Length: 208
Image (cartoon, rainbow, N blue to C red; front, side):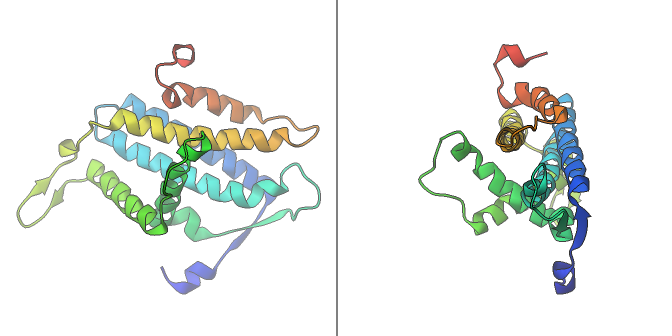
């Protein structure tokens, strides 16, 4: 990416950033549930990756803007970095780090944490899998079709991606609960309920 692209940022009002975060997270939930509807199709895998990209964008905005929400004394202008919102490589690298944080969030601490290089490798593999789910690829000695994609671990991927979304919705709930006189946005609670069955399969009270 060119240096001048890296250096350009753009200002956004904190309330617009909140609406962007909510809309991105809602779209990520939609992509997850659309993927489930297509289970058995390679397109379902691609939608999971797109879901992670939207979740990554949402998290970038939440990290920068949430301190200014519902509190006095914070700047009302947020400077967003376009490369964090538009670069597939950057979004998927952050998504890899988000996924690696899922275990520790629930108290399952690894003996080793992922490195930047490992997150970058996971991101590249995720993007390649997304492309393979959409397109036929031709090389000097083979033709690869979306139908050739191995979907054996699909349900495991769904649970993991839903878990990442749930983790960040819980973090927003926790942020709000620490502020007197502020209640959780109903859109956040609605999103959490929508993905609960996918984040916790087998818990029949969340199904249907």
